[in-house]
Length: 186
Image (cartoon, rainbow, N blue to C red; front, side, top):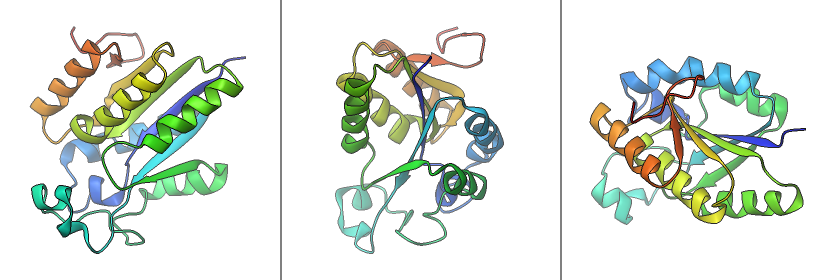
């Protein structure tokens, strides 16, 4: 039996329709939900999580757009994923920065218990949180196949999305843009 994981990165209201939302994020939201709902393996979600002192952090000074403040509507997962999380008791990793070391460590622990066959990622933003988590996971589990679904990700813009896919591909992360296995370099 396959032991696969789908990690849905930061599909939160602020990143889809809120203060950091984009047309690209809106465009992938239903597809991400459909894929997560039908996923036969283990689902995991991440949730960007800041506090009222966000503007005092390095990220807040460099990206001065208030977003994903804990326990606000913008911080919440998009409604369909929030329902899925509640129904399936999906594990959620709250993270105060782009990548989650706790997520990478947890996946490594899970791999020690039972070998993971494949880890898949999708979500937002390709060039920030998706890439950060993909590279942390790849560094932690270099022999586990890692896939980023480019067609189920949205970047801060199209150029940055493509650049992130290319960078991840260079780091031996399979960046697929469809179920047939076409890579980002095609």
